[in-house]
Image (cartoon, rainbow, N blue to C red; front, side):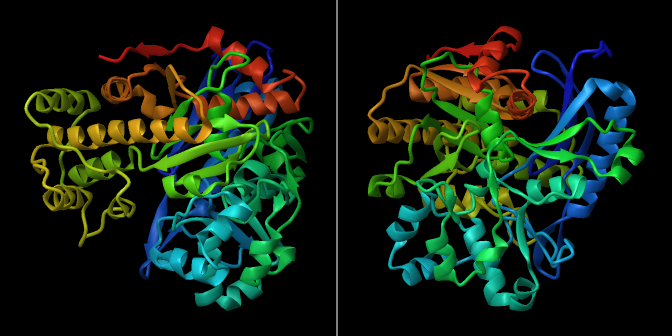
Length: 481
């Protein structure tokens, strides 16, 4: 991408496996820095290397400003949901940032449900599906296991809130990310004080919630000097939850209610609604009500996603095996002709990462044996079992969305990095009977940039950004067999 004097925006897009610093706009962009979002297991507990991640972000920002200088007008950060940093009165971390896959929250869903008088009570106040990694359970585990650290805490900041604070010195809680915590009330559009008070959390931990697209302020003077940035550059509280950014980039037309899957480590399947859906059926089906970039509700279901595939590949690579994605796809298609196995990707055993005593491949085999399915034995067969399982899970979730909302759909938008998997795109079309529109691949970064453009007055609405994306970003179509 050439320097041409046109406005550019920096999207810092952090996923559970890697992060990117991206510079551009809705028409063209460049990844100027890519890095691993490292995590470490220390004495049995799993943490993010949040300082290392911040250091990588600074490297990317410095390169971005060296390349594009005064063309850059703003910076926005999006990350996975639910995780956080706790800071003291000086703004310093009081604890390492836990990874959402850490096991300390095991069993807390049932324990807290009993304390509140049932899951329906918690759901009625938050609209969030019951996942062991929700911030509610993470903070409950700290309250139980590390009360000294919680007592020393003055503010709760989500991971993107924390990183933005380090860039600007400004502490705010961005709304789309706050809505993932199970501590936010989508009806009152504020923290769920009923849940917070029942848990005995100090209310002062939870600060001002700001909308996606709020201007936080400029970089600190020291950072402007170190990065070579202009004082005019603004840090934006973009749609800080990566799924909210991705859904903003669904290339739908005005008046549509697009059905989408944000496909990556997780598959987030749902629709946008004007208000939360808090009925018992939504609880039973595992749907959640999170906030979108526009302030509407993302009514969606978390499906395990490409995480299962990623952990299998990580294990094979740890054994010294090297294979390209092209080779893996070829093996998958060969296996598909003779192997018809599949798994349920939402089985809880698939949540945790590989460990020496529990490999993802072994868990897949165990699930198949327990459920009377021929277990996979080749890499291609493992991929078939995963992809078929995901396609079936998509079809079941779409039927539930249709029943719960009373809406029917003809098209499924698959966005994000997982949309590059053309085998799964086609099998999703076949399983659901819907036409699949795959792309844009970089939906999260594009949605991040779109919200920044809205904040800086360069577009007037999310829909204007979506209309532009339809004209400049390529998608692929897959018809059901």
